Image (cartoon, rainbow, N blue to C red):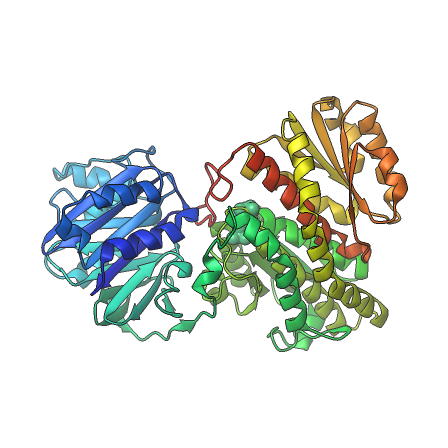
Length: 612
Ligand code: AGP
């Protein structure tokens, strides 16, 4: 939620900040703004709209501001206060001393505001952020460190703050609690941003601020402090991502580019964690075997698409062995439940961003109970990576499209292997199952390539059905998580009503909705549940709903049950979802494209959900 950027150095701040904001725009994009410094003067430019429009506004600023050597910028996902130019960041204190951008929610902003208004300070906006801005100006008496320390003590809630003091020309201050902030320094310049992808073109050595840390950026370097004002030494983390990886290349949308990268994600995952026909995660999994053997229950916890990845993992675990009790929960519920914890419990938290507020809170709860924790994330240096003792990094590279695609693939690849490693360490994974699944996994990348080559077929189906009034995704067992993912993709990028149901549940209510305007997308691989699922499909067909089947190659009879069929290569049944997700992603993508939706930045959404 919200992308922020700060720069001080010898380069042109306007271009560097605008470019950094554009790279982070997926984090929030309802309004945007920049503040640029020229000596002691600081000028703000803000708009309701996208960074591309802010660029035009900045071009009209007086020349000296275009040449400015420092500034801060923000792209907003509104929480407190409507989407207006006044509420857009940066915010400026009444006395003009403090100019600030913020990501997060200041929970005691009303109390702070009431107190400051009582002292005669006039507020201009409806935002929670302005309370932090006015309070900092009120606290600042010429000593920035003292004022920042006092501010951090006074604020409740989550914040990443980036700040300019009008009388401190060569400094940018920043502070973090609850919202991500990454800092870097190179060639007489210092930078900060919400997301590492904004800084990769300058350096790959990044300093991730910890909870309760702040920093002052100067052209010659960065100094770090705790919220108590005590200086801290920090070592950079090297991020191997390439800035090119965060570019769209020849593609119209990041989402389409990222869908196409999934075969490589699977290849990398398999290469990193397997040996011919066996799983070998020992090097990356820093959890002693005796702990794994002691575990009596496993909690799988995540949000959104990452949650569906955990449902798939749960399914694989159940398919391979039932001796261990495993449960799946969304993080927003887990964090408030009286869940079991302790030495006999392993909790696995999955978050591509590593910054989802609910998942972080859930992980903190588990850790406080002494539960063994593993995080699966795509972002090295992210909060979950730093807070959880064991991290497995998914190998998807930076994902920019708001809709998760290749990170899902990275997650399910890792989760499948992790599940097998755990069962193997406990001595309950049969050699046959291990070889069967790993052998089949190795065929996935080539199969994925072949599905991507058939994009035209899927695009034609998407165009045919884009006018449907709604969509039902149905399937059984291993396909149920995918029905949810298929429906979510359509909701988030095409804004169309779409529901996911275990196929057997349709007759318990949802079937009443069916008619010729509602498409049923049925996942029917050639498994022991094929006939059962086809019966449910027939029930839908009898209510005049058009049917799109996703089936296994060779099942010629499937055509008799559907208006259209997408055939997928045959793989072990646990892995069918790994292939089926690709046509579902492409289908949603092409429906959204047909309807001319803003695919990479769908309305009302943000890629990292760093508020509760
Ligand atoms: C997926 O397309 C969504 N953007 C969303 O559901 C996402 O998966 C969810 O917010 C969790 O994000 P995380 O993996 O970064 O924690």
